[in-house]
Image 1 (cartoon, rainbow, N blue to C red):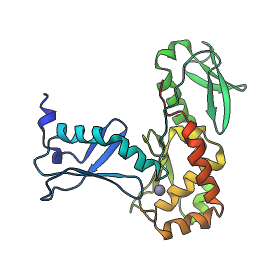
Image 2 (image 1 turned 180 degrees about the vertical axis):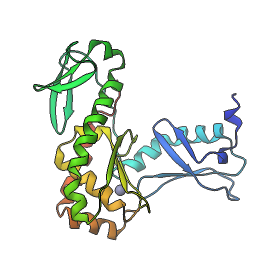
Image 3 (image 1 turned 90 degrees about the vertical axis):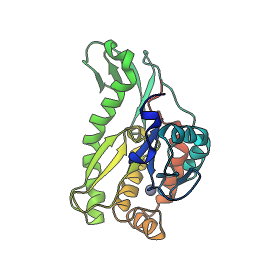
Length: 246
Ligand SMILES: [Zn+2]
């Protein structure tokens, strides 16, 4: 057993188990461990004061299936993992269209040109990381432009978009006093632009309201009256999106 395993859980702000990140609630006089899935799909772990990190980690592992099921009920991004191989002809999506992969040393890393993804053969061993870098770089530029009309409609100043791996969430945003920003999962760049718009609108609304309250949905509806169609489509298409598994 490592020293970290017997460390008290409550010294951590957050416990990460696989792709699940749980916020640790302040200790109370409770005697059992409990996970709650909040309305915005964030996870809270409540545990007795003497709980170790190892014990809490095992608890999360045992409860994982239940957590994924709860997340699926809350628009989160879950489903059987889609895997990819980094071989000639494999398909990768960008903005709702599929492109075949060509391995070529004409590119240093990864590029999308003339209707095909190109990858340097030296990247194949870390193909998922190389693709992820491409989605993050290309997607950041695309989203910075794409969000402009939406932030204008919200009456907001410039809002930064950060593209990153968000595990099981399409996007995240919190109301804040300082500069406003929203996070979008790199995998979302595989979706058609209309669905990415829904993710942007959803997160813009979260800058004002953390939870999925009626006021929250009213804000979403004001920006995107037909949002419910996009939301349903996202739940269906989202299951077939590649999240980086190989
Ligand atoms: Zn939300």
